[in-house]
Image (cartoon, rainbow, N blue to C red; front, side, top):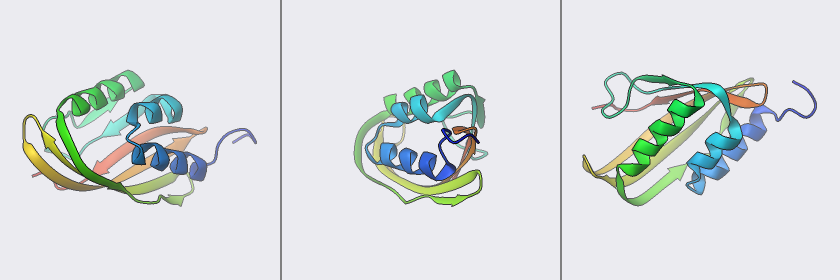
Length: 127
């Protein structure tokens, strides 16, 4: 890491701030590496278990956002950081086109390399 490379803590804090504002696309543009990977829970409905590359992550995010009719509430915890990793608890209460109203909590784990997020993985009840 060079002196100008943001720390994992700085990346984590910025991601939390943007997510709390609902600026998920901006977070991807600012904080993610071009070769980032995203992993969902096995058996999750509506998404592939793994996508790779920023274009695929953006498309996955667009599909998720397009499926939302209304957001009723949500939360994003402060990050917990350890070396190149951090985790955040997130929750959303939303009405979806294909599932109706759902309230969901998840643990999100991220890996940072060279000042960019290179891996995200989500843990939640997939049922």
